[in-house]
Length: 187
Length: 231
Image 1 (tube, rainbow over the protein chains, first blue to last red):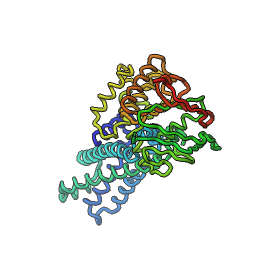
Image 2 (cartoon, rainbow over the protein chains, first blue to last red):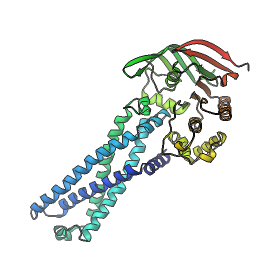
Image 3 (cartoon, rainbow over the protein chains, first blue to last red):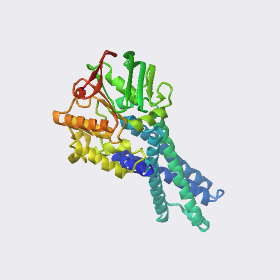
Image 4 (cartoon, chains in turn green, blue):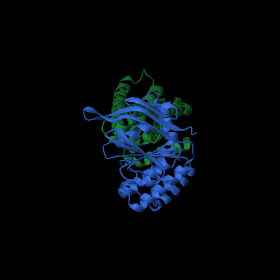
């Protein structure tokens, strides 16, 4: 039942505080860089500031790549620490698909909230001029809110997709091990 | 006759221990019917645990047949076996298998949440079970705050929550004091009255007063079969 799955996911988030916070933070950074990339693509005219754009994109892209690497490392650790409880759930009749659903809900919840926070933060930084993007404001005349919201939504979706795919792959690999091996804790 | 049935025929199983596989069970044949009690009795290391794990579908046999409710384990897909386990089997493992950072109540609930029942009804049942096992005052404690016997009782509550057709208990009372053991036994018998089959592996003679099939296991072979209990 969906309600039960939701409850399980929330319980897991609550008790795995450290990894939950990390999932959130990684979503926060990935969404910031993705959002900035899409923004510069949509609102700065290509011909005008190409050198600044390249410089800017390089930094943003490297942040993105680093975050994804960090995400992979985190999921490895996180899933490994949960091996035992996966075994317990399997022993008591949880199907692989059900375990995946719960974990998927968990990661989706964390990454969506993280990404939303990241975008909110970026918008705040741009509007308060902490993140100084003069060229962004030059193109400001043509910004319509619908497009902006569209970009934000797209970014959130992308971040959630990246996090869910990475963690689900790791989990699926774990789930294909023997049940008795899972509970004994030896890989 | 009963529809639900577990049948083991010409069963051989080996267990991977470090490098070389050890033959844990040798030519086991037996049936387990609904509402019956089966006891595997034997010294430690005789293969009782392996047998219980085979019956529950956690392990798969090397050779021979394990038939769970017309599912042939050696040929069945993992999904069907898991489904059967979810539906019918309440397994009480020998070692302590509890999730460390969930409370007692959450531990009892969480593996049962995938069934088609609301959390509210499950919680009500769980509280009743904990009350019967005299654990109600510890429902918000974490497993590591409990004694070994109490942890065992939590696992018993977890297994019984879904009212399983088969209760597979691996040394359920060996760590319990006499009072707790009696309350657990009372609970088991209550479930048997409702139609569950009891399968118990033990090196103690606790359940043998009641009507049951006793298999004496030695080094992976059934060396003696007796019907216990006068009733």
